[in-house]
Image 1 (tube, one colour):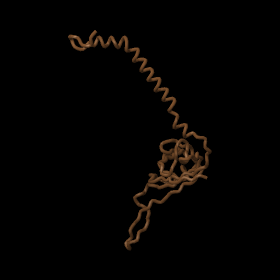
Image 2 (cartoon, helix red, strand yellow):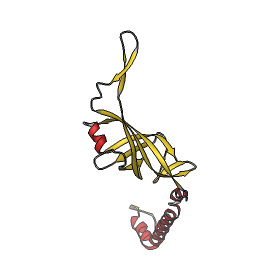
Image 3 (cartoon, one colour):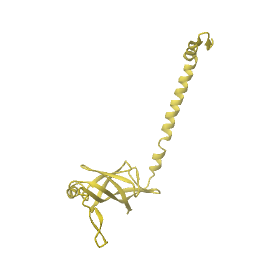
Length: 183
């Protein structure tokens, strides 16, 4: 049989070759490739997870979080009921669950602006435009693994400046890690 005949391309010949001879070779090749892909996925997928699971002792840690410009209608009521000292909250660092932490302290910070006075001096006064905004400083306590690279809470490496989130029954608050202390 010829690939080209008087009518042009001989597709019947190509179909007969693929149907008879090459189909078993192609199926065997794809099967081998699929088996190799799954084998490499199973063998090499746990490398990063095994490095993080080094048996290190846990130590008590305090994490300070800074919440900037949280919009609340009644901040005093919220701080007295939802963020009380001694309550548990879920901590999430870099969008990875980091476990339950205990609220040690909560402090509402004043939102102020610098106002130039007629005599040229500058006074720090409450910001009238921040009527429903609140800055909060939260200290959480818990246990963390201390490694060469830093403190690990749950599955997350926590460092100053890391984005954090705390979640509870009626709140979901974004914050930034401001300080870490190990005891």
